[in-house]
Length: 373
Image (tube, rainbow, N blue to C red; front, top):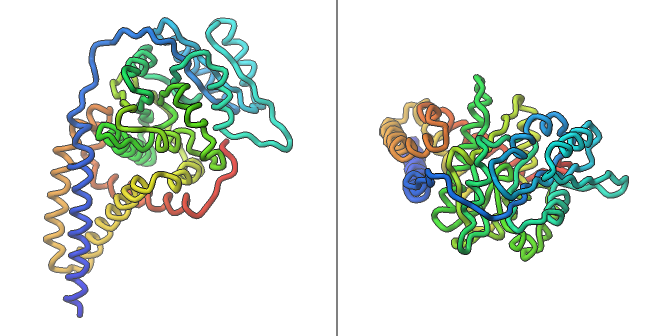
């Protein structure tokens, strides 16, 4: 009986091993072969940068000037001051005296009507005077003065969506490294999917699309009842193989600070994970298969070795094979995305990632968040 159980567990491990090899080989490898244009393009498209901010006084003071001072000829910055009760209004009024291309839209809180980020962004889009829109958050800072140029340069031909990359600042903590790895892994998934003609999400910290696309899709109407999803759900429902491009030049990175406590990370991920339930079936199924097979790969391996199942010493060799394949495929990608050092800790963070993904995925499935900030 024990031999039979060992055989079944080993077969399950083999299935997980094969499934886990599929993702880097069939999906992610395209990102390793992609090289962004090094030469700074010349772009003449008028652009509107849109930011929704609620009680972001300090972040606006620190980050907004780097966006307003982008080296781009024709652009405006639209900040939606969403029911803030801190000093955001004063900061924005001060900045307007220095930067005439700053436009402020103010939402005042209503006792009966509670607004979310999607409502604020919709007002910002309506207030924008330009067709091409670039989005970020108040707690984000572009890596260079060429961020808008790099993003706008992708609006050629049929392109209506540009997916950017938004890493976290590095600090010396395990939580920071874990969050950076999750951010990196998520980016690899959605950027590679877009290159493969099956874009399924983007991140609102670094994203661009056209006003025509937004209003043609009736904005966020299809998922306005969901608190999150202003970025990933909108892209999931509107991206196609022909209308989506990516931008991963280091000049176009947009940095943010990672959460510093488990509690704040929990609140953030609880809000974000709820949107995944509304992804298209094939995307939801593929992400679920990745999460389950990834976690089971490690659980079965560790369990088999702890109980000294004979077959699982072969599994240890297969673990090494998987790691080598990952190193071969990911070394270029990690370097391009500015996280080369994380590659050497891949087995540890990979296990933590799948554990973390499964936990937050279950939380997002069975709970509902009612407040965005």
